[in-house]
Each structure stands twice: as C-alpha cells, then as structure tokens.
Amino acid sequence: QVQLVESGGGLVQAGGSLRLSCTASGRVFQLYALGWFRQGPGDARELVAGVNKDGKTNYGDFVKGRFTISRDNTMTTIVLQMNSLKPEDTGVYYCGAYTYGRATYDSWGQGTQVTVSS
Image (cartoon, rainbow, N blue to C red):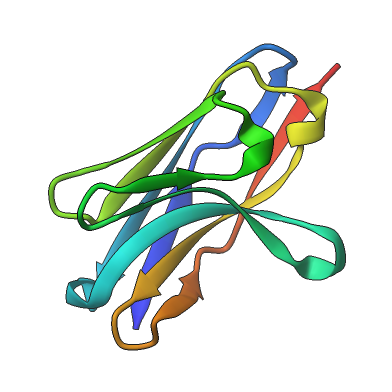
C-alpha cells in the first residue's frame, strides 16, 4: 500500500547527466528503504542504488562511482544523480520500496526511460 511516483529520465548524450526522483505516498510509515533498479534480461531488476531510513546507501557494481543517491528527512523522496552516463546505462529504471511488513522490495513505480546516445 505504498505508491511510488517517478520523475526524470529522458534522452542525454554520452558523458551527460540526468536526475531521477521518486516520491512515496500511502503507508509510508512502513518504509525501510527506497531504491532505484534497472530492468535486466528476462524482466529481472538489478539494484542501481538504494538508501534506508538510517541513511545507509548501497550501489550496484556497474555504476562504478558515477551515481549518487540521496533522500529527504522524511524518507519519502529519493533522488538519483546520474553522471558520466554511458550508452550501456540505457534502459527502464524503476523506483522500489522496501517495507518492514513484507521485508522485501514489493512496491514499484511505473518505470522511466533513460536513453543515452553515443
């Protein structure tokens, strides 16, 4: 019962930057972490970056220090700053919510397209 609304994404040239935002609503008291995932083969989603209520962050290996995730003080909004973008970063990015009740990422945004041209 957490709803996620995403914004950002778009078309950018290699080496450029984009900023993705995600805002949670509904039963936000159940939130433990919010993160960004990229759609992978077979509809699998790989972690790009996540942050929990204590401010601990973790990043997927493929971002290699290029991306930074941050949160607001209510833990309802996260921002992913994507720098030095590469064509291989192209894909659909989803915001996900990890809740105490389900102990997993079980709520998702609709996805936003990121396209990086050569």
